[in-house]
Length: 494
Image 1 (cartoon, rainbow, N blue to C red):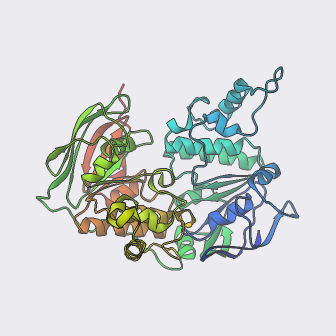
Image 2: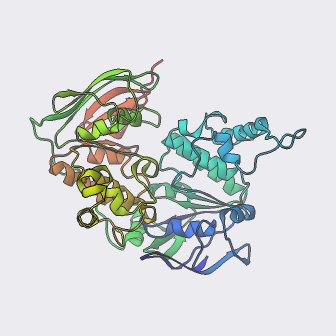
Image 3: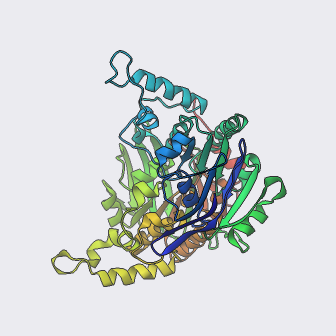
């Protein structure tokens, strides 16, 4: 890809970008959120049209007008933002538009054959999911693996992985790396986009760095250090933020959960959250952390248990009940549950507080909404050309900040952050950490669910560890180590 340029309204996303891939190599493409990595790859797979530049494929200049053409050429992409249809089964998602027909009745689909082929792909990924299960019933991590299976189903010669491990456990990540190595040995070229730079040592042959939509440089991984890659990415040194403020000795308990239970999902969930505290939730994929958070927020029902907010027992039947009690939930799946991607930044920020912006006859006070939105854009350092930019055109880190902004405007005191730095780069991640420190300094209280143990250890005052739907340990920050957390996270019951 040579001299690739691409603009969106108010944003020069790519400027003379360059990238090359050899047969049978894993080439990592890295950069901060907004650096242009995903945009460049979406051009390669036909999801976006380039403004100018050349794409040379197998020695010939090619035009890739849409994703189907790319797939027919042998180029597939596993997108960071899940691109599945939740109402369809795993098998239907993988083979949609390419379903085999019954030999004796070709007007009907051959479901048995579709399920059989799907099972073979899932077995290759060691994914224990039935082909006929609806995607909506899967966790984000398993949905990501289904995306990968879909890409593998095209027998591609080039596969692009955009943040493939962001929602995967360590075991799932190792399985993925095994698959990538196998594909590489078969001569398939792999483009690997990741913010988890430590992964590059294990999987990448070469690394290309982008910054602000431009090509910075390429080198073999064996010649690079993580510090050098970060320096190329950000153009400055990054000092990782630590938890700054300790919880006051007699801090008020703002949230208490007692014996919360949901059949076959979690049980006996009891913990407390204090004012000005970051309470980390650790555990492996499937431990039940997100399910507990959703139950507290009223997104999912519970069978029994009690929730107290500032000492008073509350009944939370739905998210509006939770919001009215000052509880906010920032979902791990921003696109699906946290944002309305086709609306602008202003609309997303004011949405939970809409009644405060209504004039007579139900019209929105646009000037007031714009003024308030700009205040939060400045406060949270959201990188956007204007409040009228569509949220889907922002980088992952800035989308996350928009979600935070809407809950801060609503003035919620209890914030549940579910994988707050999932899919965002080292610079944006540091800004999220700073934001967490600012929030607890203001007296907010935070539940932080994270699959990254260094993040949990760095930011939490106390750490709740879950395994198979139950709490197996609660550790103070001073006593917590990765080894202790993993011990409690694997305390399976017979």
